[in-house]
Amino acid sequence: MKKWIAGLLLIGLLLISLVNAEVRINEVELNPYGSDTGNEWIELYSDSLINLESWKLVNTDNEIIPLNQSFSGYKIINLEEQWLDNENESVILYNGDSLISITPVLRDNNNDNRTWNYCNGVWLFLSSTPGLINACSQSNNQSDNTNQTNPNLNNTNNSSNLEISLILDWDDEDIVNGKTFEITIKAENLENKNYDIKVGIYDEDNRLISQTYDENEKWVSSSEYYNEFFSGSGSVEEHIKLRIKESYRDFKGDAVIIVRLRETGSAVYKKEKKEDIEILKNRINEDGNQENLISNGPEIINKQEAKIIESENIIYLTKSKNLETESIKTNKNTIYKSKNELIKTYSIYFFAFLLVVLCVLLVFIRI
Image: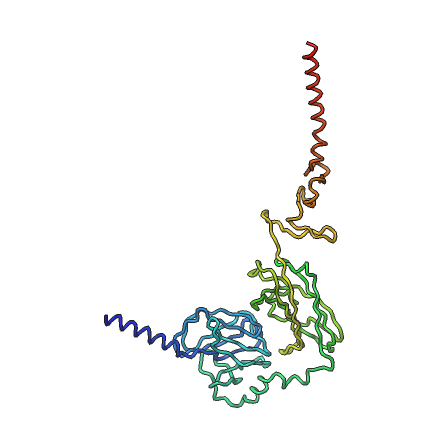
């Protein structure tokens, strides 16, 4: 009995420690020295052992990183892809649907080893201390902190008299999962500068589901910018290729396409455009061949409305309501015959059979 009571007390103490445990986002590296891809990281802190199963990190673009580790003290989450924007970025830590910790809106244009550090309820832009206590005693970066956290302070010189506008266009029938499709982007009121473009498609849960064909002719995550996509001033129009990620090959339906434009070399995007887009399913039949909708002039005939007969790599189509009155043939043999065709074909044999019967009857009558 005493052991049983001791066990309950131990469990109770454990639960109390978990409830009272402090877990927070402790440090964020938005813009590391060199390339952002593979070098960004987020540090978590817990003052006791915590199991992160069902926990997740979410950024401003609503991209999700699931967590499942157990740790105490400091935990570094290394980001394999470029996941954090250098401007207008915030990171949220959830336990299931419960918000645990959130950063303010952050900004880092310095491309150095300084990071955002949690310091007694405020966030300061200080030298990075991954896996160590934050260097909150540094006070010479307060001016940097003010400039970095207020995105409007450094934007007055970047504004132009005319606001940049983005116009998107695509062929709805080309937006098919499993295929490469093309988006036309027209930018108006550009200054005489080079501009980068980031184009991504997101599902209803705000997950990034697309890849972009970049200037190096490689498929990369759509979280990456296409460098020097626009060049020149005034109105410029270009095309960009996208495809749905292999991990979302079964996705179809409504989604959102988001385009961001920035000046080349800047971490601040100047214009954002969002539009609804529909992803069509790339249907595959039982033989592994692709099934598409078939156009009969202005009328679209689908699998339920038509009969498709395939022979020698030629597809013949007849509408189902006319199947009894139409015949489809190749130059070698008949593939399908209607009832009328069957009657015409076999009537000669039937007539010959009647003649034979009449001859036999006449012979028996004479006998």
